[in-house]
Length: 311
Ligand SMILES: C[C@@](CO)(OP(=O)(O)O)[C@H](O)COP(=O)(O)OP(=O)(O)OC[C@H]1O[C@@H](n2ccc(N)nc2=O)[C@H](O)[C@@H]1O
Ligand SMILES: Nc1ncnc2c1ncn2[C@@H]1O[C@H](COP(=O)(O)OP(=O)(O)O)[C@@H](O)[C@H]1O
Image (cartoon, rainbow, N blue to C red):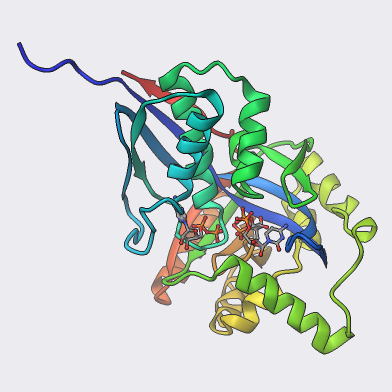
């Protein structure tokens, strides 16, 4: 009796912080050459893919999911459809996303959804395409998607999608100040271009000058938070702060109340404060919360997209 139980696969994929982010000149394809040191952190998206004849996606979780488009522009749905097209799979999938990474926050939540959806559908459909094809599809979906698959600590060049793993020791403690509203990634890039034109009369350094500083790589390699705090940098920060000047006060609060250093994560407006240990993290989280900000503690690096459960 009863209907046949449909098979499901659940995959978890992490959000990220750009510990170091250099933006080069705008290229003809509308993208900037970048040099990123990505660190995956312990704030995870969970995507469950369930057998279905149609394609659909729904969202739930602790963050505001109301602004997420559910049409074909949705990154998780695009990922599933791209894998189906690539492999000739003729069915569909029902995607259910548990969202913890703030939307349009600069932490790559949509990218994590796309990476998780790719891996979940790959497992559910038994495509057997292999990791390198998944990576190629990930890069087509967005600059940050390959890193969400890979996780850990990695240098990203090109659009940010050409990855090489970085040596990393130990664990770093971060306190995140989460935004109430997001910033649009393309608008932040455009604002940086405008800022550079206004101040320097050009659109930024050529690709050969866009590199991750050796001080950052060294700090991550030995696991030294104090040195990393000195070396952290994000070229997009000036643009994010121009668009959301209220963040300046929050950065100053964090830095005056225990953070080794604070940085805008990616295109923002999430702020990431590096602290020396778990105790400091809990204290700074309390300070930010009492000042009326939504704050969370996370650690990094963590692994990339992984299958959690198949049933
Ligand atoms: C800024 C970063 C830092 O890791 O992340 P977020 O803050 O968005 O999480 C990334 O560069 C964002 O990556 P992602 O969000 O995947 O970007 P995509 O969807 O590929 O591109 C969205 C738009 O951002 C701009 N873009 C993106 C990447 C890049 N190297 N140069 C760009 O100029 C382009 O205008 C592009 O059309
Ligand atoms: N699965 C998804 N989750 C979140 N946002 C998505 C998704 N698919 C498409 N989007 C769109 O992408 C925009 C930014 O995505 P997100 O990854 O949350 O931010 P960021 O690029 O700042 O890290 C959102 O404002 C939303 O319109």
